[in-house]
Image (cartoon, rainbow, N blue to C red; front, side, top):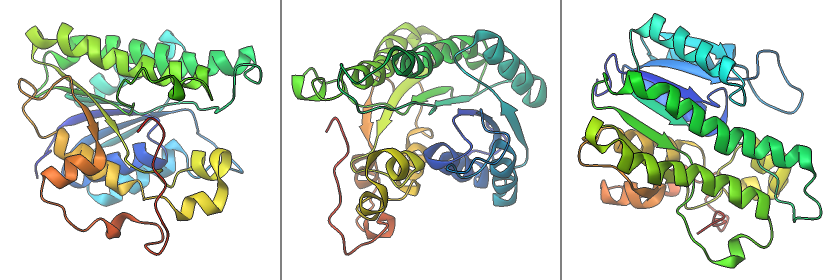
Length: 273
Protein backbone atom coordinates (compact mmCIF):
# COMPACT_ATOMS: atom_id res chain seq x y z
CA UNK A 1 0.00 0.00 0.00
CA UNK A 2 2.21 2.79 -1.32
CA UNK A 3 0.08 5.52 0.20
CA UNK A 4 -0.90 3.74 3.41
CA UNK A 5 -2.31 6.33 5.84
CA UNK A 6 -1.07 9.24 3.73
CA UNK A 7 -3.25 12.27 4.44
CA UNK A 8 -4.54 13.87 1.25
CA UNK A 9 -6.64 16.98 0.62
CA UNK A 10 -8.13 17.30 -2.88
CA UNK A 11 -10.03 20.38 -4.02
CA UNK A 12 -12.71 19.84 -6.64
CA UNK A 13 -12.70 16.19 -5.68
CA UNK A 14 -16.38 15.35 -6.08
CA UNK A 15 -16.16 14.41 -9.79
CA UNK A 16 -13.90 14.13 -12.82
CA UNK A 17 -10.14 14.25 -12.45
CA UNK A 18 -10.21 15.14 -8.76
CA UNK A 19 -12.38 12.14 -7.91
CA UNK A 20 -10.27 9.83 -10.09
CA UNK A 21 -7.13 10.86 -8.20
CA UNK A 22 -8.94 10.38 -4.89
CA UNK A 23 -10.08 6.89 -5.90
CA UNK A 24 -6.57 5.90 -6.98
CA UNK A 25 -4.86 7.16 -3.84
CA UNK A 26 -7.64 5.88 -1.59
CA UNK A 27 -7.35 2.38 -3.05
CA UNK A 28 -3.64 2.53 -2.19
CA UNK A 29 -4.38 3.28 1.45
CA UNK A 30 -4.56 7.06 1.63
CA UNK A 31 -6.93 8.99 3.86
CA UNK A 32 -8.82 11.43 1.65
CA UNK A 33 -10.46 14.79 2.35
CA UNK A 34 -12.79 15.79 -0.49
CA UNK A 35 -13.18 19.58 -0.65
CA UNK A 36 -15.85 20.73 -3.10
CA UNK A 37 -19.04 22.78 -3.31
CA UNK A 38 -21.63 20.23 -4.42
CA UNK A 39 -23.63 18.74 -1.55
CA UNK A 40 -26.96 18.27 -3.36
CA UNK A 41 -27.45 16.51 -6.73
CA UNK A 42 -27.11 18.86 -9.71
CA UNK A 43 -29.09 18.30 -12.94
CA UNK A 44 -26.04 18.72 -15.18
CA UNK A 45 -23.21 17.61 -12.90
CA UNK A 46 -22.53 14.10 -11.71
CA UNK A 47 -22.07 13.41 -8.00
CA UNK A 48 -21.70 15.25 -4.71
CA UNK A 49 -19.07 15.30 -1.99
CA UNK A 50 -21.06 12.57 -0.24
CA UNK A 51 -21.42 10.22 -3.22
CA UNK A 52 -17.72 10.72 -4.02
CA UNK A 53 -16.77 9.95 -0.42
CA UNK A 54 -18.80 6.73 -0.55
CA UNK A 55 -17.05 5.63 -3.75
CA UNK A 56 -13.61 6.38 -2.33
CA UNK A 57 -14.44 4.52 0.86
CA UNK A 58 -15.63 1.53 -1.18
CA UNK A 59 -12.39 1.65 -3.19
CA UNK A 60 -10.47 0.90 0.00
CA UNK A 61 -9.56 4.20 1.64
CA UNK A 62 -9.27 3.79 5.42
CA UNK A 63 -10.86 7.19 6.05
CA UNK A 64 -12.69 9.74 3.92
CA UNK A 65 -14.09 13.10 4.95
CA UNK A 66 -16.40 15.09 2.63
CA UNK A 67 -16.06 18.85 3.11
CA UNK A 68 -18.30 21.51 1.62
CA UNK A 69 -15.84 24.23 0.62
CA UNK A 70 -15.82 27.32 -1.58
CA UNK A 71 -12.14 28.07 -2.07
CA UNK A 72 -12.86 31.68 -3.06
CA UNK A 73 -13.32 32.43 0.63
CA UNK A 74 -10.57 32.16 3.22
CA UNK A 75 -13.00 31.33 6.04
CA UNK A 76 -14.21 28.30 4.07
CA UNK A 77 -10.62 27.24 3.34
CA UNK A 78 -9.53 27.59 6.95
CA UNK A 79 -12.50 25.55 8.18
CA UNK A 80 -11.71 22.77 5.69
CA UNK A 81 -8.03 22.65 6.64
CA UNK A 82 -8.93 22.63 10.32
CA UNK A 83 -11.42 19.78 9.83
CA UNK A 84 -8.88 17.77 7.79
CA UNK A 85 -6.13 18.15 10.38
CA UNK A 86 -8.48 17.35 13.25
CA UNK A 87 -9.61 14.19 11.45
CA UNK A 88 -6.28 12.97 10.07
CA UNK A 89 -3.70 14.59 12.34
CA UNK A 90 -2.03 16.44 9.49
CA UNK A 91 -1.68 16.78 5.71
CA UNK A 92 0.94 15.09 3.51
CA UNK A 93 -0.46 15.84 0.03
CA UNK A 94 -2.46 18.72 -1.42
CA UNK A 95 -4.01 18.37 -4.88
CA UNK A 96 -5.26 21.70 -6.27
CA UNK A 97 -7.76 20.47 -8.83
CA UNK A 98 -10.72 22.88 -8.40
CA UNK A 99 -11.04 25.10 -11.44
CA UNK A 100 -13.49 27.21 -13.44
CA UNK A 101 -13.46 27.53 -17.22
CA UNK A 102 -14.87 29.85 -19.87
CA UNK A 103 -13.32 29.79 -23.34
CA UNK A 104 -14.58 33.23 -24.28
CA UNK A 105 -12.78 36.14 -25.89
CA UNK A 106 -12.34 39.42 -24.07
CA UNK A 107 -15.55 41.06 -25.26
CA UNK A 108 -17.60 38.01 -24.31
CA UNK A 109 -16.08 37.56 -20.84
CA UNK A 110 -18.27 39.38 -18.35
CA UNK A 111 -16.84 40.57 -15.01
CA UNK A 112 -18.69 37.89 -13.04
CA UNK A 113 -17.07 35.12 -15.09
CA UNK A 114 -13.65 36.79 -14.82
CA UNK A 115 -14.03 36.96 -11.04
CA UNK A 116 -15.13 33.32 -10.84
CA UNK A 117 -12.15 32.00 -12.81
CA UNK A 118 -9.59 34.11 -11.01
CA UNK A 119 -11.26 33.61 -7.64
CA UNK A 120 -11.10 29.82 -7.94
CA UNK A 121 -8.13 29.15 -10.20
CA UNK A 122 -5.64 31.71 -8.90
CA UNK A 123 -6.82 33.08 -5.56
CA UNK A 124 -8.24 29.77 -4.36
CA UNK A 125 -5.18 27.75 -5.36
CA UNK A 126 -2.85 30.27 -3.73
CA UNK A 127 -4.83 30.48 -0.49
CA UNK A 128 -5.39 26.73 -0.11
CA UNK A 129 -1.67 26.15 -0.69
CA UNK A 130 -0.79 28.87 1.79
CA UNK A 131 -3.09 27.42 4.46
CA UNK A 132 -1.63 23.92 3.99
CA UNK A 133 2.05 24.87 4.25
CA UNK A 134 2.26 24.75 8.07
CA UNK A 135 0.89 21.21 7.98
CA UNK A 136 2.78 20.03 4.90
CA UNK A 137 6.10 20.98 6.45
CA UNK A 138 5.35 18.45 9.19
CA UNK A 139 4.15 15.88 6.67
CA UNK A 140 5.75 12.74 5.26
CA UNK A 141 7.18 13.26 1.75
CA UNK A 142 4.95 16.34 1.32
CA UNK A 143 3.66 17.29 -2.13
CA UNK A 144 1.55 20.01 -3.72
CA UNK A 145 0.18 19.05 -7.14
CA UNK A 146 -1.70 21.60 -9.27
CA UNK A 147 -3.78 20.58 -12.27
CA UNK A 148 -2.46 23.34 -14.51
CA UNK A 149 -0.58 23.65 -17.81
CA UNK A 150 3.07 24.31 -18.64
CA UNK A 151 3.77 28.02 -18.96
CA UNK A 152 4.04 29.11 -22.57
CA UNK A 153 4.02 32.75 -23.66
CA UNK A 154 2.96 31.97 -27.24
CA UNK A 155 0.18 34.52 -28.02
CA UNK A 156 -1.98 31.79 -29.59
CA UNK A 157 -2.80 30.55 -26.10
CA UNK A 158 -3.93 34.01 -25.00
CA UNK A 159 -5.84 35.47 -27.92
CA UNK A 160 -8.88 33.12 -28.02
CA UNK A 161 -9.57 33.02 -24.26
CA UNK A 162 -7.40 35.56 -22.48
CA UNK A 163 -9.13 35.48 -19.10
CA UNK A 164 -9.08 31.69 -18.82
CA UNK A 165 -5.45 31.45 -19.92
CA UNK A 166 -4.40 34.06 -17.37
CA UNK A 167 -6.20 32.17 -14.61
CA UNK A 168 -4.73 28.76 -15.47
CA UNK A 169 -1.26 30.22 -15.92
CA UNK A 170 -1.78 31.83 -12.52
CA UNK A 171 -2.10 28.33 -11.07
CA UNK A 172 1.10 27.35 -12.85
CA UNK A 173 2.91 30.41 -11.51
CA UNK A 174 1.95 29.26 -8.02
CA UNK A 175 3.82 26.03 -8.81
CA UNK A 176 6.83 27.91 -10.14
CA UNK A 177 7.06 30.13 -7.08
CA UNK A 178 6.26 27.59 -4.38
CA UNK A 179 8.68 25.02 -5.77
CA UNK A 180 11.54 27.43 -5.15
CA UNK A 181 10.14 28.98 -1.98
CA UNK A 182 9.42 25.67 -0.27
CA UNK A 183 12.66 23.86 -1.13
CA UNK A 184 14.12 24.55 2.34
CA UNK A 185 11.02 22.91 3.85
CA UNK A 186 11.34 19.86 1.53
CA UNK A 187 7.81 20.40 0.17
CA UNK A 188 7.46 19.57 -3.52
CA UNK A 189 5.30 21.66 -5.84
CA UNK A 190 4.53 20.34 -9.32
CA UNK A 191 1.95 20.77 -12.08
CA UNK A 192 0.20 18.07 -14.11
CA UNK A 193 -1.70 18.55 -17.37
CA UNK A 194 -3.30 16.08 -19.81
CA UNK A 195 -1.97 15.42 -23.29
CA UNK A 196 -5.53 15.07 -24.59
CA UNK A 197 -8.94 16.31 -23.59
CA UNK A 198 -10.36 14.36 -20.65
CA UNK A 199 -13.93 13.08 -20.48
CA UNK A 200 -15.29 15.33 -17.73
CA UNK A 201 -18.38 17.45 -17.17
CA UNK A 202 -16.54 20.52 -18.47
CA UNK A 203 -15.81 18.83 -21.80
CA UNK A 204 -19.33 17.48 -22.10
CA UNK A 205 -21.26 20.56 -20.97
CA UNK A 206 -19.06 23.47 -22.03
CA UNK A 207 -16.54 22.51 -24.68
CA UNK A 208 -17.70 19.95 -27.21
CA UNK A 209 -20.47 17.68 -26.00
CA UNK A 210 -20.66 14.00 -26.87
CA UNK A 211 -18.50 14.33 -30.00
CA UNK A 212 -15.54 15.65 -28.01
CA UNK A 213 -16.14 13.18 -25.18
CA UNK A 214 -15.63 10.35 -27.68
CA UNK A 215 -12.27 11.86 -28.72
CA UNK A 216 -11.10 12.13 -25.12
CA UNK A 217 -9.38 9.94 -22.58
CA UNK A 218 -10.82 8.98 -19.22
CA UNK A 219 -9.77 10.76 -16.00
CA UNK A 220 -7.96 7.56 -15.05
CA UNK A 221 -4.90 8.53 -17.08
CA UNK A 222 -4.42 11.71 -15.06
CA UNK A 223 -4.96 9.78 -11.82
CA UNK A 224 -2.33 7.21 -12.80
CA UNK A 225 0.15 9.98 -13.63
CA UNK A 226 -0.56 11.73 -10.32
CA UNK A 227 -0.07 8.42 -8.52
CA UNK A 228 3.41 8.14 -10.03
CA UNK A 229 4.40 11.76 -9.31
CA UNK A 230 3.24 11.74 -5.69
CA UNK A 231 5.43 8.72 -4.90
CA UNK A 232 8.59 10.58 -5.86
CA UNK A 233 10.86 12.06 -3.16
CA UNK A 234 9.72 15.61 -2.46
CA UNK A 235 13.34 16.68 -2.07
CA UNK A 236 14.13 15.64 -5.64
CA UNK A 237 10.91 16.08 -7.65
CA UNK A 238 9.76 19.69 -7.59
CA UNK A 239 9.15 22.55 -10.00
CA UNK A 240 8.08 20.28 -12.86
CA UNK A 241 5.31 20.78 -15.40
CA UNK A 242 4.33 17.20 -16.11
CA UNK A 243 2.20 15.90 -18.98
CA UNK A 244 0.23 12.75 -18.08
CA UNK A 245 1.24 10.70 -21.12
CA UNK A 246 4.93 11.55 -20.71
CA UNK A 247 4.86 10.59 -17.03
CA UNK A 248 3.36 7.21 -17.80
CA UNK A 249 5.67 6.54 -20.74
CA UNK A 250 8.62 7.15 -18.41
CA UNK A 251 7.03 4.71 -15.96
CA UNK A 252 6.90 2.02 -18.66
CA UNK A 253 3.32 2.28 -19.93
CA UNK A 254 3.10 1.44 -23.63
CA UNK A 255 -0.61 0.75 -24.19
CA UNK A 256 -2.64 3.94 -23.93
CA UNK A 257 -5.73 2.55 -25.64
CA UNK A 258 -6.98 1.51 -22.20
CA UNK A 259 -7.61 5.19 -21.43
CA UNK A 260 -9.52 6.10 -24.60
CA UNK A 261 -13.25 6.65 -24.30
CA UNK A 262 -13.57 5.31 -27.85
CA UNK A 263 -10.34 3.74 -29.20
CA UNK A 264 -11.65 4.07 -32.76
CA UNK A 265 -11.69 7.88 -32.54
CA UNK A 266 -8.76 10.23 -33.14
CA UNK A 267 -7.80 11.86 -29.85
CA UNK A 268 -8.12 15.62 -29.36
CA UNK A 269 -5.02 17.32 -28.00
CA UNK A 270 -5.72 19.46 -24.95
CA UNK A 271 -5.29 23.22 -24.74
CA UNK A 272 -1.86 24.76 -24.10
CA UNK A 273 0.07 21.92 -25.79
